[in-house]
Structure formats: C-alpha cells, structure tokens
Image (cartoon, rainbow, N blue to C red):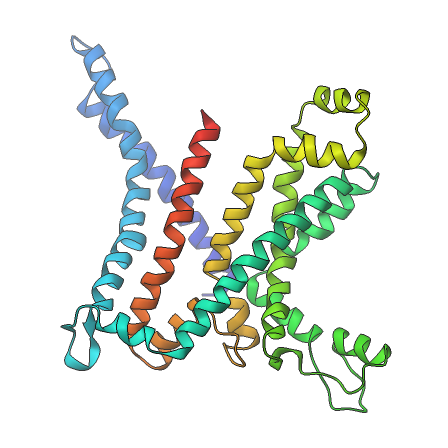
Length: 332
C-alpha cells in the first residue's frame, strides 16, 4: 500500500474506531442502566458516574501499555544482568554506570544545558513577545520566530549542521558561520562542532532557536492578559518603559514564566535528536539520552542502559509533578 494511502486509512480507522467506541459504549450503558422506568433516577446517576470512566478507558489502557509497563520493565532490567541470562544483580548496573567517565560527561553536559537553554529560550521569548507587541508587523515577526517549532529536532539539526559546515581552506565555504568567520579575517575555517566546551554551546543554539518560538507564544498571551489599568496607573505615576516591564508586567506573569521555564527544562533533560544527529556524543558533547541509546543499542548493555533511563526519569519526575501542581493551582 502506498504510504500516503496507508496514512489516510490509519486516520480513518483510528478516528472512526474512537467514534464507534464512544457511541457503542453509550448504547451499552443505556441498555444496562436504562434512563427510564421505575429506577430511572438511580440509573441516570449511576450512568453519569460510569460514563467518564468508559471514555477514559482507552487513554488509561494506552498509558498503562506505553508508559506504566515500560517504566516497570526498565526498572526491572536496570536490576538485572544480560550476560548471566537476566539474573538479579541489584544496584550493580548503577555502580558500573557511575564508574564510566562518559556517564559523568553526559550528566555534566545535561546540567550545562539546564542552565543555558531554559534561561535563554525563556528570556528571548519574553523579549520578543514584548517587542513584537509594539510594532505594526509584529504578527509577521512572531510567525517567523515560531516557524522553527514546526521543524523536527532532526531537521533542525541538519539545518544547523550546514550552518557549522567547514570546507578545506581556500575553497568556498557553504557554512554560514565559517563564511562570516573568514570574511571578518578569522583565518582558516573552523570545525566548530569539535571544539571542546564551545561545541556544546553550538548545539544548544539549535534548541534555543526552536524553543524561543514556544516561549514567545505563551508569554505573549500572558502579556496581553495583563489589565491595562495597572499599566496606565504606572504611567500616570511617572514610571518609564523599563520600570513598567520589570516591576509591573513581569511580576504579574511570573507564574507563566515559571511554567514555560520548567516545560523547556523537561525538553532539555530528554534532549537526544540534536546531539545524535550532529555529533553523536563525540568531542565531549555526550548527554544522558544519547548515552542511554549508546548503551542500549550500540554496546547492547541493557542493564546500564536501563539504569541511565531511570536516572533521566528521576530527574524529569519532580519537574513534571511541579508543573501539574502549578497547572491545577492556576485552574482554581
């Protein structure tokens, strides 16, 4: 079957299956608890209690199958050894993992990503949201800045790999960065992705480029939600634009800023595609997700690979819980 036709059939069957399930579940529930007769009131109350769970059932099954089971199985594998046929070895894999320099390199790089990427993405997003609200062609600028969000991480990595590309000295440079470097008299072209420490920053630029659009959209909506009365009162009191921004606007959208910050932090902790496509963790650019992939599918060590996956989950979980709690607090 042609891939396009296969995709269309999948959509039709998937959507049709969901609609059919919801319709059929309603019919069955009405047959079992008929909303008429002597016990109509009691049946309606019971049906109203059961119906939400019927609608949630497919999602709960999917969560159990694709989230809960993998977590449990990953934890089990992290406590076993493949070489001994899956024998229980306790925390031996975790000890082995912590004894590998690549793990500490990955952990250190992840911490660096956590410091730089959420701060820069949120900061640029807030700056752009504020500036584009003050110009006539702001919507066009927002569209251009948001556009990278539509690109996959691998696609963005390929684009930026071309930006960092280096050709032999004396030949025409197709990499934008090297072309500018030579034009400004920098000398021979540089292999930017092989320069220790700086190559991590060059990789971070890709994720900042993508996530700035996300931060801009959310923060722009938050800025528009600030009551005009508070801004007008500040202007009457003699506040300048900088004071209005930092002392009036930012405090009122602090909760939104934190949600954006933590959401980008979750993305950073799981970053894999960019590093894999651009350096594959070479030249000191290893991150936890790429380290996990290497252990699982290159060295075929399921114990250490699963242990590193559990480390990522432990780092992600507190931030995820905090996001959920904050979202519920905002809804009250």
